[in-house]
Amino acid sequence: MKLMRFGAKGYEKPGVLIDGKAYDCSVLVDDWQGETLSNIDRTAIFQQVKQGQLVQIGDTVRRGPCVARPPKLIGIGLNYLDHAKELGLTPPDEPLIFLKANNITAGAFDDLYLPPHAKQVDWEVELGIVIGKEAFNLNTLADSEDAILGYTIVNDITDRYWQFDRQGQWTKGKSYPGFCTLGPWMSFKEDVQVDNLSLELSVNNQVKQASNTQQLVFTPAQVVHYLSQFMALEPGDIICTGTPGGIGYSSTPQQFLHAGDIITASIEGLGEQEQRCYS
Image 1: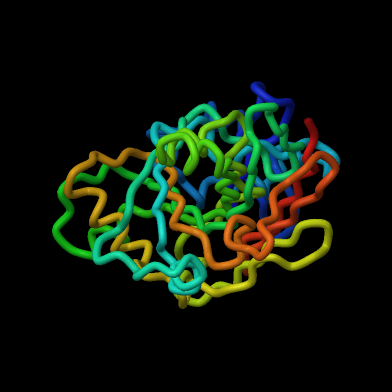
Image 2: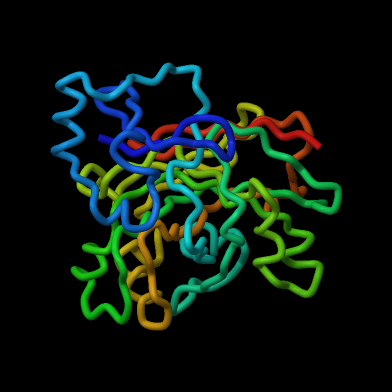
């Protein structure tokens, strides 16, 4: 079973994917957010589906962000060995942390608006962690694993102009509306071999990023443990665990997104996204 959300932007409803079919869960929960994520009764949902009590959703219905507006969108920088290498940097001794505005999430197939002041928009396929319970000052990595509900695909879209050229503040380059695509679904952690997942991103059918989570400097559990030492994590928080090598900024010559470009991003077992850029 996977969590997903569907419907028009701003009016999404919670749903699940079971055996490739999507079902409306709005009769059971208001949305996939907050405490709802801490108290998911998967057995009951399976039973409702088996008994035909949940309405099936058509394939043409829009898929929204798989988690409703997160309390926090937390990013981790330089967390892939190949990404640090392409930038000529040494992998950090501790995770590098930044925040994205939490009202910018978009669906996996939503068009991507390139604002006029965003001059160097770049792609970043990432494994996203979905937090499932409150977590603060965790003691062990086992506790950290327990705080993770599941995983999803994130495209941590970034404008390098605001990130680097305008006094080097990462959050500025990462907080335009739509600059964080989530989904198309969230898989529960028990169903994901998170230490060995292939990631890939293409622009106009040309592969730009191709890597594996084996390249991670800090594992998801290590990241959650580290964050919990100075930040209270909540159900529904999304942690973007970093991007592998192949970003446009480090290409020769540099490459950035333009109107008409089509981005496709995938992570093994977590599905695929596609965004068409426009201005």
